Amino acid sequence: MTKNLYLKLMIRKAIPLFDEQGFNISEIKKELIVSVADTGRFAGFYYPLTYEQNKSGLHEIEVDENIDNGLEATGVLIHEMCHAIQYHIYGDDIRMHGKEFRKIALSVGLQGPMRSTTSSKQLQSKIRRWEKEIGPYPHPIPILARTLNLILDLITYGGCFYLLVLATEYYALHQ
Image 1 (cartoon, rainbow, N blue to C red):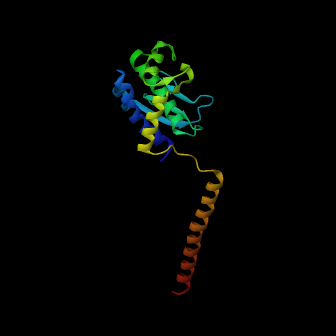
Image 2 (image 1 turned 180 degrees about the vertical axis):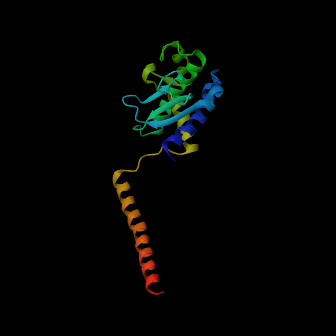
Image 3 (image 1 turned 90 degrees about the horizontal axis):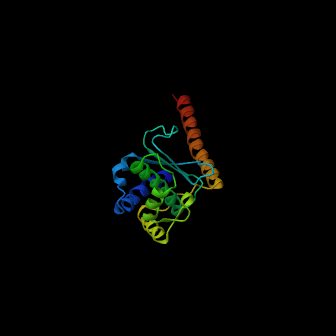
């Protein structure tokens, strides 16, 4: 499983959180797209429909590729989903982390300063249950393991290529 797939599955799990609180994110679920990217100094980023970097015309969410655990990644995802539903309900004439955002975020289990929310204990518990259902957050293969895999691939496929060359030469000589 990739981080992108994990986050897409987590969107499906998180949608009822919003719907149960009266924020019908189901209305825009087909327009929510998520990806893992280098978000610089941010844990996540939401590209509103009117944002000039939004190329798709959909509600684009990015989660930082350097986050290495599902609990944090899903918390960031839910924070960014709050922005998407905020935009859907109120448009872009409001503060990104203002009272509308705060109302949505607190209702779905986020806490702390609104610019850098964390998951409440109850939300963490839900995320852990979801993770048991879909599987753990993927971790990148360490560089040593990647290098060893590459060497094994070269030996395996290089060896096959060498055998193919030998077989071709043998066939050419014995015709």
